[in-house]
Length: 189
Image (cartoon, rainbow, N blue to C red; front, side):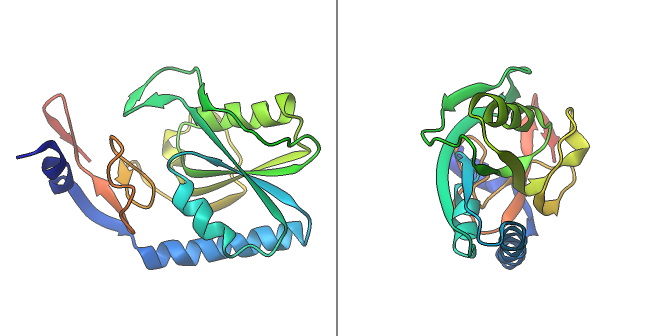
């Protein structure tokens, strides 16, 4: 059995359907449209997990937008590096004096998000910074983070699909499913 076949056999139940995702994306876009009321906003998508979310979100926004991409992480694969955030790709837009919304696929520990907020406010001089996440895994929070726009609050599952991955697989799935990992010979859900 190949590694990839074995991975796809570990897919657990779908917990968020494509239809539910679409409904949440439209709701979030409506909130952003109301909050910014024709004022320009810069969306900063943290790659790679949020690419599908931001793509769907912008199709429902009615406010002027600019889009930038970054890659900040405090994880490598599924292993925690520590409390140090690594910048793999920095922002190539000037956001000084601009309203910013950071777009994330999932916020759990809050370490990367806390770093991102401080980085965009203090170093990049954004006028304001708001947080938009598809999934909020608050149960894992190590740093208090205010989420301004949230699709779903979730339990402590490892999830894949709709941009979320395991070892770069599963991003293409339209629904979000639980992934049953094998860690040190034990099944984790």
